[in-house]
Length: 220
Image (cartoon, rainbow, N blue to C red; front, top):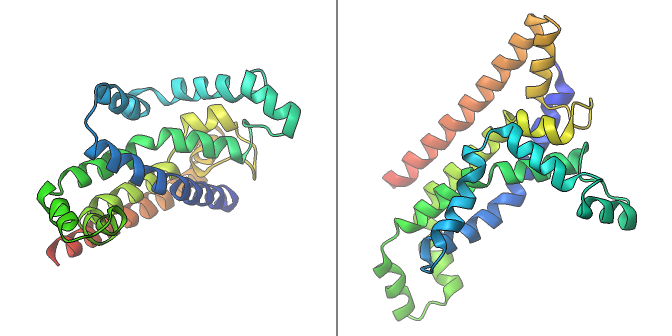
């Protein structure tokens, strides 16, 4: 069992969730409420990481963030910051790849809230923030929870994007999915079986817990 790779994957999933959850809340609510020309294009961009092959997305991220790119060269020269083949690169790639998994469920949750509830809150003198906190978030909670769990679990199983942007550096960029692939390539099926089973059980537990919590919240 490659515990270092597992802990790195868990750290990456937690960091991705911490970055995407507040951003996803804002973007999901905005897309649910906004009406403007070009909204369909923005929604298409949000969904794009879901339909692109991971290696294609990883390639474009590698080209955009690498030391040969204008931004990568500028950051390396002025701040000695590299955006590829390290944990920071993994985090950026994971955030981009998981945008649709976070934003879409939250957007649908906010779209399902009847408009008359927020209008009634405004009539009763609640501010925008009070309405969000007291009315919208409790009603959108099942969608928010589902988005968080999907993002976390999906990050654990990422392979193509993280391999393209981070490589397979033990202790730095070698995640559990990459470790499983390496064990299969080395014909170490016993280790691959153990890691794959552990990843399966963790993912199943997370999704089942999410469904249970959503069901309890909906029933209440």
